[in-house]
Image 1 (tube, rainbow over the protein chains, first blue to last red):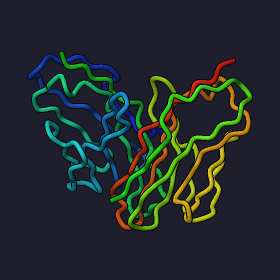
Image 2: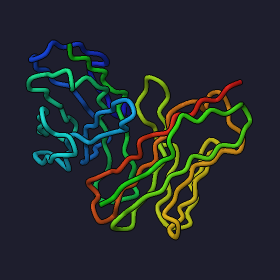
Image 3: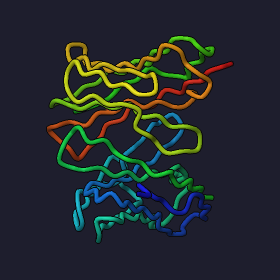
Image 4: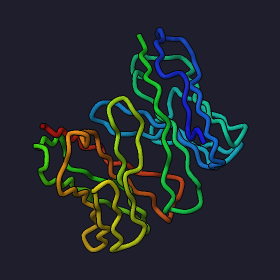
Length: 114
Length: 113
């Protein structure tokens, strides 16, 4: 199993550009989520999904869009990048319907918006 | 609502010292509790977990006991190594809402030789 994979590892954007961060998992997990990690802020939930076709907002959804067309993939779209979106982005997945199931994290995408 | 509070870092210890990182939680339901570790430049990895009161999670010499009466899940290790230098996150997942994981702000541990 590859686990949770994310691409790209690093990205530099100019203000106003758009891009998609890719996330895929091969563990057949129904639950997937996106977090951003900023210095001193811990992890903040952006969006999550409990299955194909079902998504919901997390704590900091503004400026981001998601869709879930397959169980395996959960891309995160930045519609018009802003410097405030400079961060490290983590995708995670889990089995959904039991509290004892942990999340598995990808290696992260480090995004810089100039 | 649910939340997790961790002791602030950084924590700096000498090799072979005893480690405690405090974690307390607030939950509306009956949560499962987790400790994750993040090494520099990497994603989070599960270190240990406990799913009911008085359970003890353990892994790589780290331990944490689920204390419902004090709503705590403190991380301990008897003798730290330089390779334990990382950021540690306490987290919970509530049975009343499986769709949300709540993370503490993280505690950076520096171990000096």
